[in-house]
Structure formats: structure tokens, C-alpha cells
Length: 260
Image 1 (tube, rainbow, N blue to C red):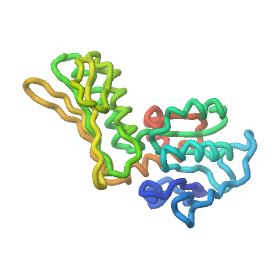
Image 2: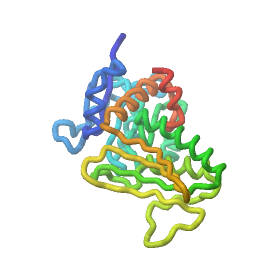
Image 3: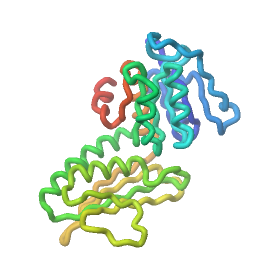
Image 4: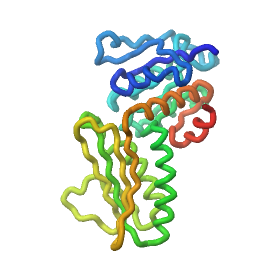
């Protein structure tokens, strides 16, 4: 079977982890782009292809992008203009998704984005949803969230924390607002707190707690390293080559797992 030609955009810790595990989907890293690394600072794109030219951009079958919220939109736009399927693991830019939908016909391009490509975290989403729904029926528990990441992380709260908050708000009728910064104000009955910690080299820790007068329950996902994120992104890349559209990883997680 012919190897998948992979372009890595952003050669930080995640980009390197993706490169190390490329063989998981029978891929080879054809090129790397990172403006902060001298030897990778020129984006080596092939000539644009016509809309009828199918997937891939000639030299690359797919690109995996882990960069910065300030630069990722332009990176993704350039890649899609060259008809290269894209998997983006950068967070903090999702408010611009509609801009991409106005620039491109989703039926003719392929973009998979996500707050968290960890396989375990996407399973955790389902666990939190089911647990919150059941606890909501009891009416006995308050709820909180906590996320911790390395001190260099650009966005706060994490994109994953925002997704978890949406899940909670959709399944707990007593809450209609997630508070990420208390600003020296007490919580209202309809609110719950979701706190952030930035320190050291924490890969990614997310905790959802349910507190009552008589006990406490905790759901925890703690990433040991970045391999789970890399494998999820690679699985998404394999899926993106064969399937067009602009999609959130969490919404097609089951499809991607089955297809791999």
C-alpha cells in the first residue's frame, strides 16, 4: 500500500509527536513548516489544483497543523486554497470557522478541527455527558470543572474546558452559565465554576466534580504524554483524505475510530 504523504505545520512538541508516530497510519512526513524554526520556515506548498482535481495537493495527501491561535487561520486558509486536506489541533480560533465556510464550499474541501484529539478525552466527553445527565435527575449535587496545562499554553480556558462546559450546560438543567473567571464575585445558583491552572510542563488535566452535603464524585482525564493526541490527529488525517467537509473531531469521532 502506498504511503500517505504528510505535511506537518508547526514543529513544536505536538508536531514532533505526530512525526514520531506517522507510521501508525502508514504515513511518511514529506515536509515540515514552522516559522519559528529556521530550517522549516518556508512553507513548501505545491501549485494550486483545480476544484475537480480531487484530494491532496500533489506533494502532500494531508496536512496536520498544531500552531498558534494567531497564525493558524492563515495557515489553514492557504492549505485549503491548495486543495490540501487539513487536520487542525490548534485551539482558540474556532470563532472563525464560519469565515472558512464563507470562503470555501465545504463539499469541495476537507478540514477536521478539534479542541482535543486525544482518543481518551473523546471517550471522556461521553462519560461526562452520561454522568451529568444522571446526576441532574437527582437534584442533589453541585458541579465544578478544573483544567491544568503547561505554562506556555496560549489560550485559557482550554478549548477542551469549553467543550466540557457545553456538555454540562446541555445536561444539567440547574445551570445555564459557566464562569471561567470569578472576578471576586460569588457564584449564582445558575452558574458553575470552571477553573484553569498553568504551571510547569503539565500535558493536560481535566476534572469534573459533583459535590453534595454527603459525598463527592470526580471524573478525571489526565494525559500522561502527547501520544494519544498524536494518534487521534493521525487517525483524523487518514479520514480527511477520503471525506470532504468542515467537521469537528468530536462530532465524527466514532466514524473515525471505525474507519481506522
